[in-house]
Image 1: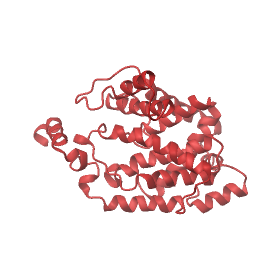
Image 2: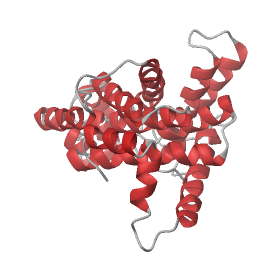
Image 3: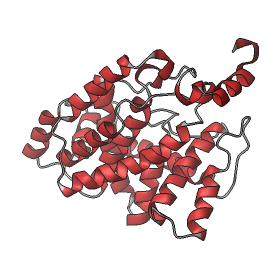
Length: 292
């Protein structure tokens, strides 16, 4: 996979192709991979994403600390009963992000794309787009391929781990992947997809990882919901022709550097930020007992 924005854009312009086409070309270099098996695998993951994003829309799970129980159903009911500020499409998408987070907290089946802590963003974005635009499987696969390309670049230059790079590395990366997928599914160019991905990460640069008791629940679920919003607004900006003057790989490198600058208490240790509050520490002590 090409690893700089210029290389990717030059290749796609020369070959009159999109980011998804480039990623597919690279994936099929694996002698053990066929296009048929790749498509089947992606469709299987998309099905898991669809299920998790819908799982808690109409029911509530009960988890040990009940920190995020019922958020998805509550928000989904809200959009049905009232004229929302954000509009039905966006509130529904956020409810779907809550759903995957709640499903994960209840030990349900999810697709960690790229992590469990950010697992609600891609499913909500992909499911929302399929519903709104009545997208077929081929278009969904193309979007997923574009997201894979973005993920590969992030993995090359930085990290997905909240313990290493903060939540910017988790929800930021997931939002960037989702934004590129959205651009691809709506027919945008590789340059637009990369611009959208850059904008999403810029929007959350420096975001800390501070889960209460180290559990991937609170405040993670809110960042999944806002992460979906981030992917939509960034995709719209890119599709409108707005560009990031800093290339995507440089944006990712900056994210990695910022992550290393974050104090360790703000990198998934459950000690700082929201986790460090009086309430957060009380839950931590209850969860860990004598080991707190």
